[in-house]
Image (cartoon, rainbow over all chains, first blue to last red; front, side):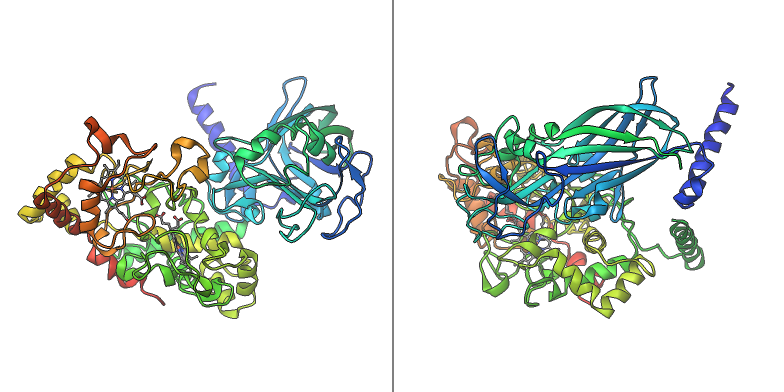
Length: 275
Length: 340
């Protein structure tokens, strides 16, 4: 291609992107990119629904590998930097931007909010994909963009940065005086674990999952179903002991447990739904 | 999305129209030529007169505090370069005493470390701290947003600043406050006029400048008068405030604090993170003969086995004369920043 033609092609591409951007996504049909839905299904071991209890509830339906009983009052995490890859080189990286309430590529999953558990990712190049990866938390580039709507409740003000994962609940083994969004210091059995920090230490963790093939075309809207086992967070590589530590609210303490995060996520199934 | 683009186009056209018509400088951030380049993310939060005015209104509104008694301006007063003129340790809600002295506010657009321990890395995140701090304003930011949404006045002000029909949310509130605060540029002191236009400084101030460059500018560096680092300048033998350690949890950062700017320093007494010195005389006496040995004392303040920076009384007073040339009268009396 001679360089003039190349330039022209780039301009046309730029122009069409601008035009695309200035239109609503519904109008994107007929353009040769596709859309995928990613479902984050939180579970605790075999239990799939009704995961959360109210603060103050003293029924403890779950048991850790240390034999400590607990319930959950809050589960929230931030998913970012979604990448899809395929066996034949297909590659898609979700676009990232933060500008106030205009946020792309960063998603808050909240167990108490069903609609937050399905992400729609679009503008994906057609092809076959069999691997998904993403990060839990927000790296420095995102923090450096300043205010965003997703910082509500997922942010440390005193040491600027996003909290990647919040797990709160109650355990008969906890001696209380913990705190969190759902846990008051007066709660006699509360625990509150907030994992954040992007610098020293960096507790943002990458998750890579092999999956069955999905086919991206303009005519299909595949669904990827992932299962996230909260028990694996508490029981993972470094097991939480509610009697020894029932609070984490800083990066250094959280660092020991951040490696539990990737083990929580596993592939379940895909649907290759025609539109 | 299309609406927004249109809005931007119209805005751009309006701005150009203004410029053409009256030859006025459009409202916005101006980079002083002798400062390092601003690092604030203007692309994410473009400055407008209306956004700035909204930020100013919020800054002066006690609605931000739990019982509507304390505003940002309660502790940050323009007459003293937005420092706290009255209190050694700042006084917040229910007359509770804070742990530190309120620093002045200016030239935020050029740095990325705020508060004495540098825990905040972006201007937008600054207000989250005083609002939530139980000894300052003690209010959940979500409650602030609720109160603003319930107010017809705020609905109208947010619409004017960010466009009709925009939601009031924390991101927009923080953006408005930032628009107000990053516009606070102090770059027109007698010293700046000397530097840029060759205006005269007194003999004493010039001697002070030379002494300052030799003894102080290693830390209070460049035209912002800070190198942005965290250091222990020898206030105590024992750790009385962990300082930077809170953020890094490294022992080497115990009792270290951000090197503060010295612009407008003659206005911002008392001095140091806990406001322990009432006058610049006391500060100079400290550097000259009061520096305390400790595990994290800065190497520059114990060079050659000598503690501190020995200076004669005359030298100390010359340095103070120089520091007084850093006062920016235009900034502290600029009607742009007056409470609405």
